[in-house]
Image 1 (cartoon, rainbow, N blue to C red):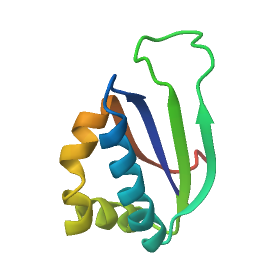
Image 2 (image 1 turned 180 degrees about the horizontal axis):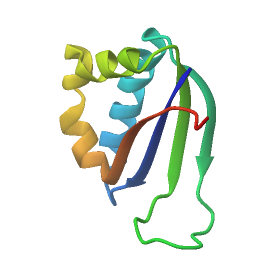
Image 3 (image 1 turned 60 degrees about the horizontal axis):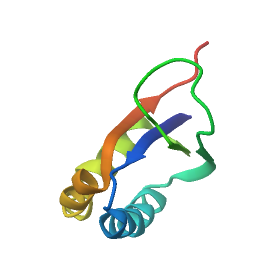
Length: 98
């Protein structure tokens, strides 16, 4: 099992771009076999300065499924909105520590 971890800080005044991005990316990730299991809002920062305000975690069968979803033409069309919508964004492919 591979987990996609996405952390974001919305850009001020870019709610429309964020809405378009989120509406477009969700079916891409679900179509790639993603199973969402947690969406959280950051309420406090103990250490660090990234300014992250939200995070999403989704499980996938393989890391290749995630890579393929983000390489798809459908996702490429969302990049302009993604880059406007977030002042900070990290898309991370993770695996369990054994």
